[in-house]
Amino acid sequence: MSQHVRGRFARPLACLLYAAALCPAIAAEQAPIPNFAPNPNVGWVASGKGFGVDFVAPPSGPGPVTNDPKYPYLTNAEAARTGKQPTYRVADLTNPILKPWAVEQMRKANEEVIAGKIPFTADSRCYPSGVPSFLLFPANPVRFIQTPTQVLMIWQQDAQIRRVLLNQPHSANPKLSWYGESVGHYEGGDTLVVDTIAQNDKTFVDNYRTPHTTQMHVIERFRLIDGGKTIEVNVHVEDPGACTTPWNAIQRYRRVEDSPLIEMVCAENNTAYFDYDVVPLLQADKPDF
Image 1 (cartoon, rainbow, N blue to C red):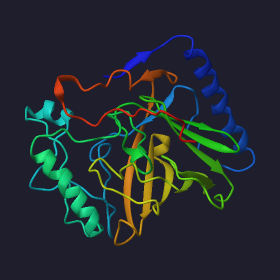
Image 2: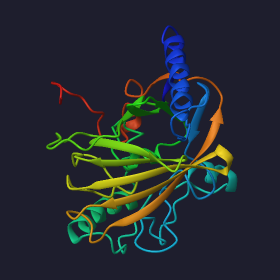
Image 3: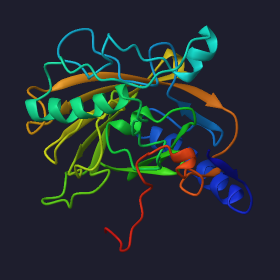
Image 4: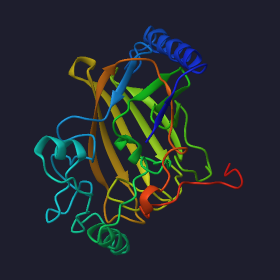
């Protein structure tokens, strides 16, 4: 269970967020852009009916992997509301976007879940999630820091950070990493477009443990809707190594305004109690950068 750590970090973090909140206003004098951080208390939570826990399919065309209808997925919240037993995700392997090797890898993961094993999710084991799976981090808000040269996205629960460099091309030969290389630009006064390449293949695309290769290319469009109360993210994924075709998905965040960013601890608390047989926490004996 994650633990809140308040103290000497709270004030510097609040000051940083407040200073960053001024940047969109300054930039707006030159060209209108979406302001995802109008004040240091604003965050964005991935939740709402049909959103938050998994990607939602687009109105038409190839879409993301969802649950196998033979094994309905029931969240803890839904289980508490209905009095039913919560379940874990079992992927629908009939989705035509998956190449045969990906289907077989996911079939093994499905069989483990059906047999009673607890499945892996990045947030539960304190792993970097990669892109686009970062969009599925639950419960705690994502905070934005916008400057003229970059945008930071910080998931509060584990201080997972994405860095988006603005108005510049990709590097000629970016080094593979957990979150890859993201570049972006603003469009239409209400949208941030983010283009990500060069991710390693240690992460999954989603919480159904959909694999990807280092060829994956992700384009996200973050757009303010509902009068600034919601961010809608349209996701486009291309991965010729793992997918038969490009596909699209949707995620939404609702605005919350509670407190500035606080520091939270993940890895110090999520040990394998009760012989859960879960994926070990990451440990490094040397830097990977």
